Image 1 (cartoon, one colour):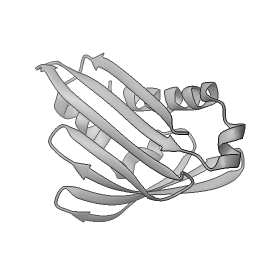
Image 2 (image 1 turned 135 degrees about the vertical axis):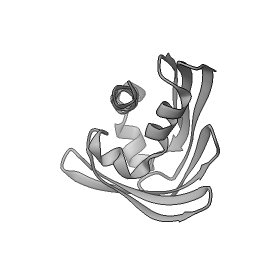
Image 3 (image 1 turned 180 degrees about the vertical axis):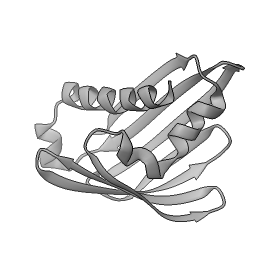
Image 4 (image 1 turned 180 degrees about the horizontal axis):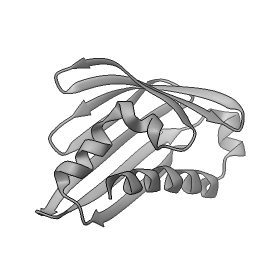
Length: 139
């Protein structure tokens, strides 16, 4: 069964500034909790392949993803990693010159045993911590 993460918030910053934070994959290690490394492996026009390394509860996880960038969104598809599948989207839409709306949606499936041990409230809590780290970086 797939699990979901949904987030939406209007911020009092320009769309350009907010999108720069969301799209700067290599800086994720500086502000995402548990992220030890963020490496851009390849960039070809609007397509990037990157790898995030996490240390969570003493265990290391690597997520390699293919990210397709447009002027206001990023589509994320896991290539390799701990999920059976992971697809996500960041959308950063201009509200006016000084504000924007950030939306994040992800759908993913954990391996069977991990899924059984990971309740939705724990996923929600971790997701909120990660998304809050983006918001703090933007504002």
